[in-house]
Image (tube, rainbow over the protein chains, first blue to last red):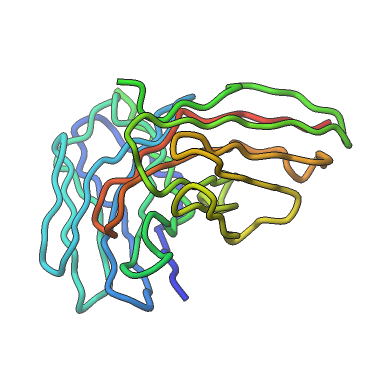
Amino acid sequence: GNSVTQMEGPVTLSEEAFLTINCTYTATGYPSLFWYVQYPGEGLQLLLKATKADDKGSNKGFEATYRKETTSFHLEKGSVQVSDSAVYFCALSVRGGTSYGKLTFGQGTILTVHP
Amino acid sequence: NAGVTQTPKFQVLKTGQSMTLQCAQDMNHEYMSWYRQDPGMGLRLIHYSVGAGITDQGEVPNGYNVSRSTTEDFPLRLLSAAPSQTSVYFCASSTQGSGNTIYFGEGSWLTVV
């Protein structure tokens, strides 16, 4: 089956620190990979995505590269801000039949950034 | 842009009561789904639909019913609420294609006492 494993949280950083949130996956098909973000009291928003190996997704200073050889999609940001405090979810979707439109999520990583 | 709209946003139920969480999307998406979010477990798929009249079970379907009579609407029914169904519920929609963005509603916070 499909599964996503994220690094254990919570993660606490000072403003301007470097962020890495690890994500690895297993998939029966050829997946697309996503990072979603959930700000306090809100729903999920797509942060970035990558649909094939070696693709790099990027948005709002965040980046993640689809590494097929290591089955990973780690999220990075060079300098975090207090406003980045949120829960981050790694997720995958595989192609084919009734798999379209379904996401398999990791457990989420809580990020808190202090001034 | 309305996108995916869920109602209600907050609800408290007593054990054994029934209720329906409403979900509507205005993007003409074929695929709609319901997830529940529990601490430390990410989001888990409850039910899924690939089009009007077609639904299927996800990872955690027990205690929930769905129907899809129109492309726009995908309500989730709790027939007899249990404390284990206390959770945050998200509705989502998308078009075909695994790389396509899946859009989420703002969530419904449900407490069963």
